[in-house]
Image (cartoon, rainbow, N blue to C red):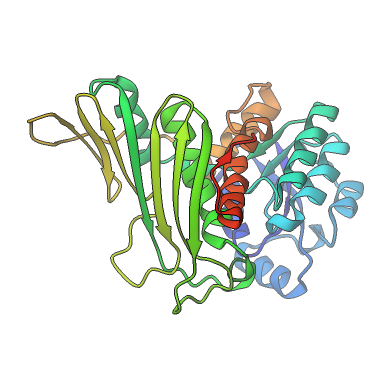
Length: 327
């Protein structure tokens, strides 16, 4: 399978490594608007500079491809994804699906209209810790889940577009955790309520801290507390998770999963071994979907439900009200 990667700087590095490490996927070409980034990546990854184009339209006219990997900033996702879909080329897009709700709906409509695959890279589902937690919850030994609590605290200095976003934590990062909520609970939220703020020491322009309460259709109440400008005692990127259940607790702390039946000692759960994880898993799933017709899990039609949580939470921030989930 051959692909065109749109955007080869920043997060594009992870996909350059994933494709170069894959036995099944190779590059047909690249799209990069920055000459400096293109020159740097040609040298770093030994890329063929003659296959780097300024636009996806130009790349599609010049080379044959089986898929497009969209690694542009969110505000460009719609244009790139719809260009590929209307050309009949499947898309593997970095999250979030799009920068706005309407743009996301436009992408889903284009995928439905053309019948072409659009898949979103929710890579946090595909790591050993999260798969171990999912397995521990699925066994059902702790009984019915009543509530979940998530804590996420990091202080990354990215620079670039993330530091200009109005709600960088929620839009660029919490999409992962919202998607994991749906994955772990097997349900979707029906209402959300949240508050956001930006501490005086924050290096982000927009609110980088938030507290959110979500009520899911299966009657589980979820509390989410996070910050992207934390000054210490950081959590892993996967966050810390605690599920209060009828017979005990299931928790993930520092990427280790524990179960504890009532009045018993905690038990460390043996990690699930994965042949592939993260981008490697998603790339393999995309390749299998395109070449063998096996439907992937994180299609745009499903992922808009995770992204919808983001925009519903932002609406709650801005109105101060409980919001009925729309996706």
